[in-house]
Length: 453
Image (cartoon, rainbow, N blue to C red; front, side):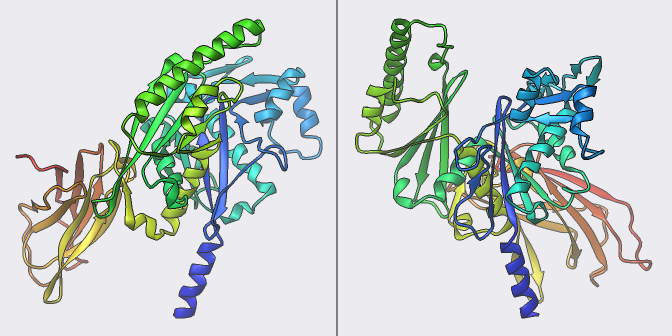
């Protein structure tokens, strides 16, 4: 028994988790073994930091498809990423862009004379992008894939889950994390001296700059973490290719001044330990005064794969939780802000049975199990806020159900959430074998997380 358990733990640690940052322009994929200290990010050029995989497809024309299939009859006629761009430029196929955007709005895409469903194209891209990892890892070792999106929409998450519901990926756990979640996971897995106080992330995209202000309240148990976000569209970077040198330098000077103003306002009267710059638009060529301000008493880091690495850290915590998961909790508008459990009898003593943990995304909050009713037809839920609120007990009465008192009343409990403000419970009478068949009764309750005064 002990040997089997040890072997199971060893097998689990040898498994691989993946973080997939799926964006409309570019995507990134990071991966690591569960017992590996730091994730690695897939690079399209061996030995270089070419992490961005263009989120595009190319549908090869008939002639090109025949050439592609010459050595392998069943090889797909779809290409992704740089290969897709190259094939399109060479006239070997039709380039398909805005895959994520069209999926988000469920907009069909016309390719030549054929109209494709957006979920189908999204699925092709995701599966082919993941297949790129085959050169580095065994795909059979993947145990969890965490997807991160700029906007967490239930429809998009369903499309991604459906795309993964293939013969190969059916046994792989699929989860989702917001960019804020990824930032949180990335930060708490860094040396603590990097985040003793606040940490700010500036994410520079085509539309401007997004800021993420990471804060910690060390007076709570577990320690609560928060992230404030803000957007600065005035930092939008125009195309500078056609500009004269004089116009380009004038633009850079203006952007530097705007960024410096943003920094001064966001850092005013705050103790900022570290600043992260995400995106290729940040450059020493133009943000000279801003960089001087950032580096004054702070550590500054630049890169572009933080979100995929953060998703990877989050996937690893789901598969094999570290002490960080019990010591820290990230609370956002999408998070459950209380621990949910229930009071149960075990012999002569009453125990607490945990159901949902604080810090869980509401869209990931699901739990199903059966219980035996012994004393009465009442279920007591214990709601314990982690932000200092008062613990309370919510009672659910199963009206019309007669409890026999001989452990023959079995009911199934299903917990889920439609938002972060309340929890839904469905309870079904399952009976007890042929002697006490189910009555078919179903009870549904919606309980607010915060007490209604």
